Length: 199
Image (cartoon, rainbow, N blue to C red; front, side, top):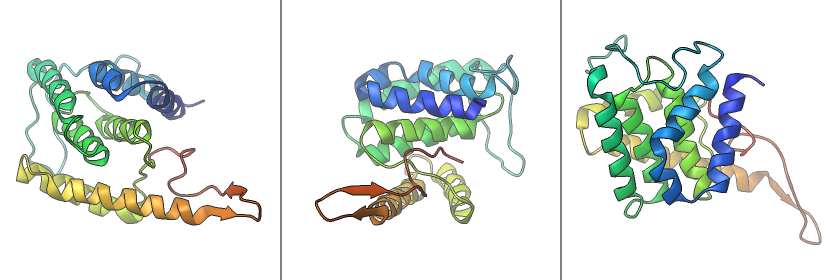
C-alpha cells in the first residue's frame, strides 16, 4: 500500500470509529498522523512534523505564519474547531477545517493533501459523502481558496463551493443506486464513492 492509501485508510478508520468530540480534542495529532502516513515514503524526516522554515507558494502573495508561530496557530485552530463543531453545519465545519489548515500551512510540504483528508474525515464522521476535486472542479477550488484568503474570516466562496460539491456527490451517489424488485440495492463505483480518496 502506498502512503496515500495508508493515509486514506487511517482517515476512514478514524472517522468511523470516533465521535466528533474525540476528533476535535485530538485534531492536531490526527492531522499530523494523516500527514505522516502519506508522507513517510516521500520524506520521512518531514512526515507529520511541523515545519522549521519559512514557506511560500509560487504565484501567491500569501504570508504564512513563521515556524516559531505554527504551534500557536494550530492550537488556536483546534480551539476554534471545538467551538464551531457545536455551531456549524457539518459541511461548513469540514470546509473550515480544510481552509484553516491550508492558511496555516504547518508542514513543509503536503498541506493541501492533508487538509483534504482532514475535510473528508469530518464529512465521513458526520455521514456525508467524500468530496473529490476532479480536474473539472480544480480551477474553481483554487480560485475559491484564493478569494477566501483575501476575504478574511468570511470564506463565503470556499464554503459555498464545498457545499455545492457535496450536494452534487450526494445526487450522483443516489443515481448510482439501482433498486431491484424486492427492495434490494446495488451500488456501482464512481465519483463520490466512499471507496475513493481525494485527488
